[in-house]
Length: 134
Length: 134
DNA sequence: ATAGGGCCTGTAGCAACTACAGGGTCAAGG
DNA sequence: CCTTGACCCTGTAGTTGCTACAGGCCCTAT
Image 1 (spheres, each protein chain N blue to C red):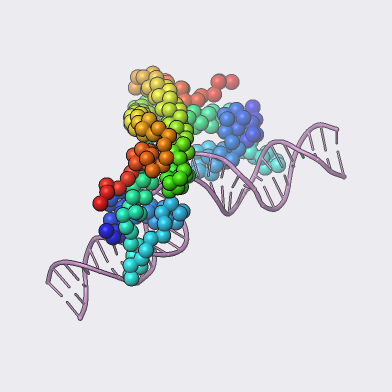
Image 2: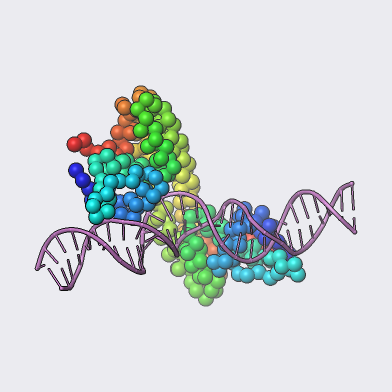
């Protein structure tokens, strides 16, 4: 029922420094302390940290996570705010996907144009931004 | 033939501060100065900056750009080193693409599971890292 | 002469951590 | 009892790739 910061880290795959960092920026509450001044966490904190980590894995920014947490903490508030954040984030992800796919093709083309000759003839160098001569 | 730092920025879509930053970290050489101490660039520098920017757009890190530049600066060196960096980078991009695609699906599923009810019933909250109860 | 733009240096800030330095604490083994 | 090693503490500085001032000089046009 009581966890050290190390337990929390192991349970959620988070480095100790990161947990302290979350505390410092107010994402995690200041926990109780043992007599020897060790942080003393309970289930609630573990749940909150899991939530944060999961959301971060899904690519939400800390600000977005903060928003999600504050909405989810308010039982009277409806789901729409959360849905909005998630949908905006989905749009972002789709944009990134498209960009990366385009980049991939270009990169592939650049690589394919190189047949292992000397640099003077290398198409990669050429492809990567030479000045129009003169 | 002679460019100010502002010209360089306009020509390559780079902010002035960024150009000075590249100079500071040694990606761009220290340019000549006018009598009034303004940076005075030529074609070569413009080419180098274009190269850097293009490579950055393609997602190469500054360290990778540095490597590409040093390889491409050596005419005796063959193309293989460049090809290697580019291919490694392509692998990275493919990894990111796969991750993002997976994330997208998950995010989509999370959003679809929410039908606009109250937070207490919201699947998004539930999906985002709840503690296994007990 | 003065207003506006552009340029200069240097420092501090952003995200989101990560990595020390320099200590205190605790459980196990000799 | 003492020591070893693993854990914890605080606080600060580093990372990447810029971006944003602050405070000041310069240059052109009116």
